[in-house]
Image 1 (cartoon, helix red, strand yellow):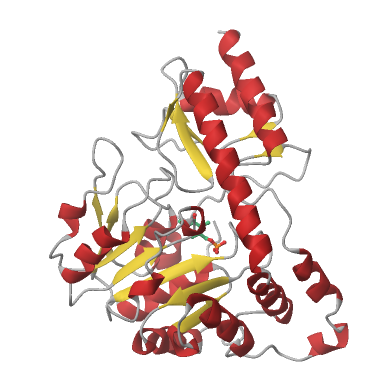
Image 2: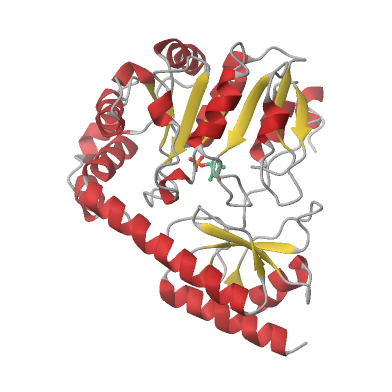
Length: 355
Ligand SMILES: *Cc1c(COP(=O)(O)O)cnc(C)c1O
């Protein structure tokens, strides 16, 4: 570590992203990317971009992109915030709505970035245990003394709460914010809380184009909330990174929104493959949590998660393993294309047979 590093930076515990190996070709089922390319309209929009326009800064308001998303979501553009991926919006949320020492509540098993941001901002992270069956215990979130962050569907379990359950949490915490991170909600039709943002001034919903829209490489995400909440996020953004969405990302994002039929078809393909793969894994003796996302969280009593991960990697298949108890027994498998999932199932069969 550099001897010039500040004390608070030295205390950080950075997020460990899933492997992005550059050495050989793997069947990559470890970071929940989409196995299908973005819409052909995205390709067209990028091709048609005049490179000489790139000498100019992009629109700091990301106006056209926010308007397109507002139309898609049935909201006003003033209720929509655009971020360079949803991680950036999570960062602005932590910077905008907390002071050092404040409490923030989230489940003990959830997206690993929340504790990282909490630490970066000097907050007390109050981690509430999931229930035995890996669901979020809604009762535990009523009447809290800090803002709340919930991934819905949750990661890495894939389990989703009903919007009515989130609504209960909102009603019981009228003076606290509830951030609902909907990175996977497109794979759980009818479960989004975006329709609730005009009704609750303490709700902020965050979505991303990294998973269901095949644009992880472009870094596009959205926040949805009251005009006041969006203005607060903008206050931080304009104090940190005003031109946060590149010109190309804006063009790609708008094209992705406008090709709604491609989006629907891609999500349906992933959901069908997910359900088929979950069934096949169960038939092989795996315990598979009921996923409403684009990944499966599975374990077997015949082998621990780290060994499974290692044996699959030797066979050219990457999945994700989390060492933190009680997740150690599990692997998280992103839903790939049908052929990739067939390879995975075949490899798992061989690995278990070799025992
Ligand atoms: C993938 C993911 C994100 C981050 O997505 P980006 O938009 O690529 O930054 C945020 N939250 C959860 C729960 C995720 O799984």
